[in-house]
Length: 249
Length: 249
DNA sequence: TCAGAAACTTGATTTAGATCAAAGTCCGAT
DNA sequence: ATCGGACTTTGATCTAAATCAAGTTTCTGA
Image (tube, rainbow over all chains, first blue to last red; front, side):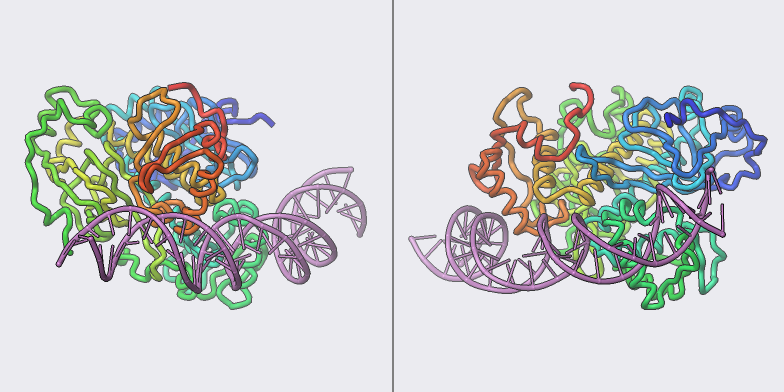
């Protein structure tokens, strides 16, 4: 199944940027109407099914892209096959690095994914000429760096329980669930195995920790991919993070 | 000892950018002579002694800076005191985030450190007007992101031995040692405790792994802060990384 | 020059999570 | 409707690294 971003057919859908779900968070967030139309002119949508590889490590990539919908993962592998997920790509996240064709990890769709892709050459030209795009890209990169550092703390020092609680809290925070709902339901976008890979655990440990949080009434599963947070404060308490968190949004 | 970057006296040394050791790698790397003189006008050197805190988490910072010499660390702490180092700052690395006063980690000097500091306001202005600076800053941020992802793999999946070997190999790679020397000697810029914090281990495990690599003849210590790599291939083999590594430099 | 502290090493013991193993559940395809 | 495989749960056992505990070496400052 040698599908990848370079060979997948382009789908020029009719979606207008105005009504794009990630319009105000993605790399185009700061663009005005004129700038947006420049991006619009070079964009192409591509779709991937759950499980499809999107990019492979070391392979040259002709595109840069924003995730429009769905969830993709970045992962790295040691020579003997141990793998670690090094990033989750959720809607509005950006894929690719200007000025470099190769990436140092594999990108895989874990749910059905739609990408908004930009051909490298014209995008890089636009980047030079459009500070609003360059600035936003920098901001996204720095946000990812912050997230990567949070994850280093998790991987290096948190217990299995804290890792699971942090993961659930992350999904909750990045989901578009109705704000002040006390009981929140969210789809788990990955298998236990993939969650384990993200958290530096084994799938058995992930399963046990889910079971234990469930027994304590902190969470519940209506089905194994659909999670309910029954006690958000207890969950936050279990993350090991400082309670402060900074100013209210 | 409430020393920090905002209160430390500025030392306007006479060093000219031309002869600066990080001229071609730091945020100024792409600047031409004119651009360099703009940076020169707003730069100030600040010195820190080994052990000094440079910045604290959450405190507003009036400066952005490049490391000129010495080694500093970024670290994060959980509420109960467990800490994880989330970055090593070596000469040419950049500190600070345009557009945000606060940082999410502590910065500490582990050796004597000299920073080349830029006042936030004029630097951000310059950033807007000077694509060569903005581009280089983006490149540095993306390099750090790559490094952070490598470290996530290390923290999540490597054994203690692999972590130590990777760490030594990193120091070797980033040191300016004479290129094709078969036996290389390098100073360890940190204590065992700090190394443990960087690698997600305890200091005892760090010590044991050093001892074991020493017994095998892979490394040697002339003094506990001075390391000799006796068998670089064996060391690289012990990192768990792919042998390929990409093109020769 | 020496006392005390900080940094480091090494050994003994414990433990969180990995590994090994066996069922149980769900889902899509015939 | 049911078969087969992918995914998940739970239990038993093992182990790498943490923790606990002495010592030893090196550095610092009086």
